Image 1 (cartoon, rainbow, N blue to C red):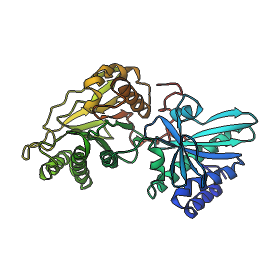
Image 2: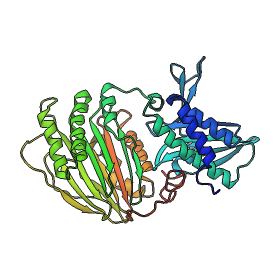
Image 3: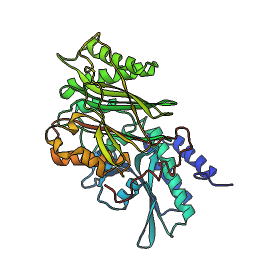
Length: 420
């Protein structure tokens, strides 16, 4: 029988292990099954932390403490900051890396689904793995991604492990407004987004949703800081989503967000700026509404330029006046960058974003938003005065073609190991 992923016997064993285990123990049960199927000396899973700058090893230890680790009941989170080593390189480049350590071989495989880097699968083998074994490990990592996605719906364990810094109440509200995955790869596009929160949450959000032939996008910035700003952002994003999920047009979504803020004011003069768009995946034409927001940036043929857009009023300002949309035609190879003013104003203005976008044009959007987040912290941090938010879309064209993937990611789109 030809091998497609793990063998059918192995996949059945994985599914059985998942269903027999509690959600908090599902990953451990699966890694144990994977290890046994490959005669591994040991096997472990490391989850990517929310900052995008470290991996976290989750360990269940009934007694004792681990120096420098966080503890919750009998679970321990050990943070392993990125240092340019093989763990980081395997995740960044989305490649399986093999390293000989003493008398055994450590295999590291990304745990990825649709370009979302969830974490890393590590296992030690007594002999050098053949290409077929390396491929099996890669597919096991892809299988593990689905296990994590399915089970994190039922427990806080993974998110607790990923939170290397505590959240305020405002940050908790803001986090719930963001999509479950910050990265999405498809035939015709690659998308990634990021949020660097201010010391006092500034109410920035991003969102996306993929329909059959449309990609819905939004980036918004609620006025003010703290809980009131987060609640204002909640009304805006919920208004957009509610209209979208009812099948509303782009202009109906804009009007719904506006109405939600006017009908439910959180404080005097509360409003939200934003860009909302619908990308036609068959043509590359983006319909977009600019509600008083910074204009997007377009990287085309190595040059980065602002995209001039007609400006509508922000959401929550006037009840009756209608919104206007405009169109932006994307070409294969284009990169569109939506951002909030935290990427542009005050100390962040020293970043010279247009120059950086040109220099970093070879990075996967997932890596680009991380690098730009680091650069904003370098020039305006470590405690930002305002949220800094990015949403990046690479337009490839070819909607409906067969997507080329390996282990949950398109290897031709991944950054090289030493980019960024």
